[in-house]
Image 1: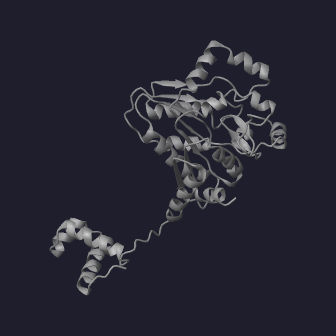
Image 2: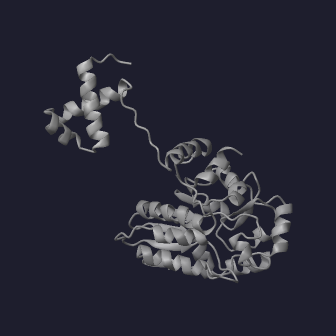
Image 3: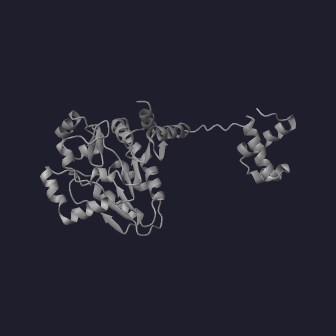
Length: 315
C-alpha cells in the first residue's frame, strides 16, 4: 500500500463519501471542498491504488459479468451476455434472455444490411426487445420453413421482425421446415425461386437464432416439425439438438440421418460463414446442444441466463 499521510487520508475519505454515498459529481465535490475537479479525480485514484477505496458490486448481475468473461474465454466468443435466471422458469426465461438479444441485434444492425432470423418463443421475445431506429434499406430473411401447428409461426415472427426494423424486404421461406424425402427436397430446392432465396439467405450480414433440444417438449418437435419417432431415431444416432435446421451430435457435426437431408433451411456450412451470428438460448435441456455449437465455434455472440452459463462452464 502506498503511504498516505493522515490529512490526505482524511481528504480521500471525505471525497470518496461524497462521490459514492452522496453521488455528487467530481465537479460538485471540488466546489464543495475548494478543490479542482482534476484534484478530486487524483484523490479517488490514489484511494483505489492505496486500497482505501474498494468498489463492491453487490447486484444480481455481479456473477453474470464473471460468467460472461468465462464464456468468452472458454468458447472464443466475441461477446457473451448473461442475465440472472428468473425465479419462475419456463416462459419467463424466453423473455429474460430474448429481450436483450433483440436489443443487441437492433443496435448492431446498420443501414443497408440483411438480417437472417430463426423462430420460436425466445425469438418472439427478441422482437419486443428491439430498439426502434430509423433504418434505411434493411432486409429480413427467414432461415426456417413452417410447422404444422403454429402458435409461434416462422412466417409471423419474420414479418414482425421486418415491421419492427422497418425493413424494405421481408423474405419468407414458403416451405415446411422438413419435407418427406430427399427427392422432394431436391425438387423444391431446384426451382428458380428457391435457388434465388438460398443464395440471398447465405448473403445476410447478421443472424439472430436459437437452438432446439431433444426433449419431447422442444418447440420444433411439439409443433410437429418432426415426429416423436424421428426424435427417438435421431437421439439413437447421436443427435443432441438442432441448429440451423440440422440435428448435430456432441462434436457439432451434422448427424447422418434422413431428417437432416430433408431440411428446407439454407446450406448449413454456408450459414456458418455469415460474419455476425448471434445465438440466444437457455435452459438445462439445451446445454448439450449449446456445448456442441459453442465448442465448434459456430457463433460470435451468445446470450443466455446465469444457470445455463454456469452449467456450460462446469459440465
